[in-house]
Image (cartoon, rainbow over all chains, first blue to last red; front, side):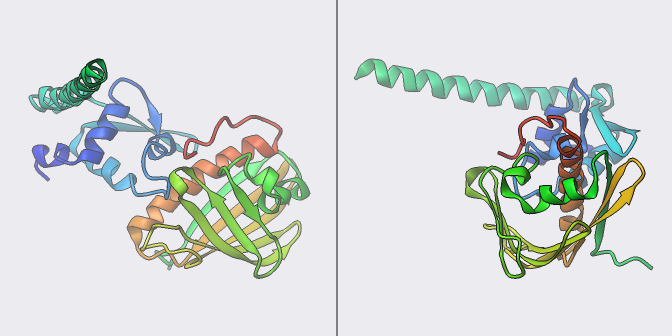
Length: 103
Length: 145
């Protein structure tokens, strides 16, 4: 899979964000997604194979963390994506506030 | 040869089999490791219903109850066509150890590898929570609630 293809998936971007600068277990990551236990493992495998996350084992647990440097030039794209997401949230909140103020 | 559609998760718990068994059949105890609204009627044909957030529920019925060694129930999800309510089967066996209980959970009939992986992750997380709770600890809030 091409590196750009790896990050062009909302769930994988969300996983990257979750493990961007903190370690999490597979179960902890999965808990951030659909409650009917929808597959996060495949996405983790894709990210791992691309080298964008590193996995280590501790007992029975697999623990993941992003390798920011491995993303290379894509790192800026990923961070911009989250930044824009927050920007949209800010715009929506401010629009809502203005609507209230106009009432 | 192993059947790719059977998943098995094992956990050792520092509590006796009678104690661990009740965490599978008693709703008040069950919700301490999984779910919010939990309805369990542990008789053959009795309801097994574990509510998660957003109205999603794990739904099936009890098939076999053999305290304190074995419990079998069907399993599936509301709003999930690939694993519909009652469409799969979970067999839990409890083996006494010197130090507590070994829980072996086998999940049969999951439709494909992807959903098997989903459920392996799910059961692994929840059985770890059960191990903490049944041994007297606090596993914290269920992250799916």
